[in-house]
Image: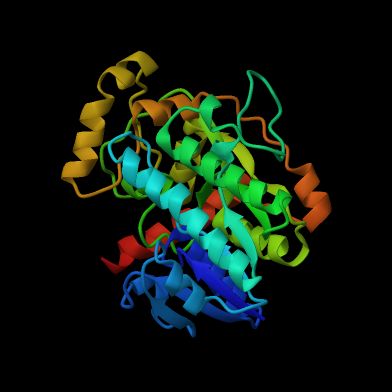
Length: 326
């Protein structure tokens, strides 16, 4: 079977491509440039173009194939709000239109951040999305795109399902995700601090498997939650200390203090040419309700996930190898 993958040089997309190849599938990747190191050595059909170009998509997507749309823009600030909406919402609508015209199946990689939730509410697979109830351009844009996908499946114009991963960590983090940056900073003894909060972390290996299961078993119009296990910030650093054999004594800062100087933290990472790891929005996410229940996805698709410790270990292994090569 032919799979067409967008976002193939990103963390989720690249690991999904590797799994598809391992499973013996033919893979076509749609990219902006052909020489990305994330694709080096992979036996894929590379098509260079712009995802907002409907004609490019129609030329690249064959009738009856499966499209995995993982391209997106993660943002923990409002700095590039218009670009975030264009990338996450507008382009998704164009990809959906191309899939509809080509009668191709679509698996859209949304985000658990796109799911509206109440205080102390268990978060499960949503049947609809409410962008106006969410905070931050990233969550709103992913929810808007997810809502559009569901509207198209409801009308019968599109065969598509949605997957919603939580905080993804793990191998082949070529572009260094936000959590990946924290792990890299910890093992390379760069400045860090502990804060109150935590999140649900899931291995990118499990997410890639969940995406393939959704492509094979998912029902059109349904959303599937690809979650893992909750881990606090303190537990994350303790686990990293155990893995690298040296427990760092990191200062613990109150949330009000970190929030007050969050803009300086964003500037610090920007000047280093790195992705910011803390912002007011990120701090809010770390202290939002985080009780995910993916039992429906597990029953429906056969999805499974590793422990938070093993997910962190997978990510640590990747960044430790980079450190040792330097």
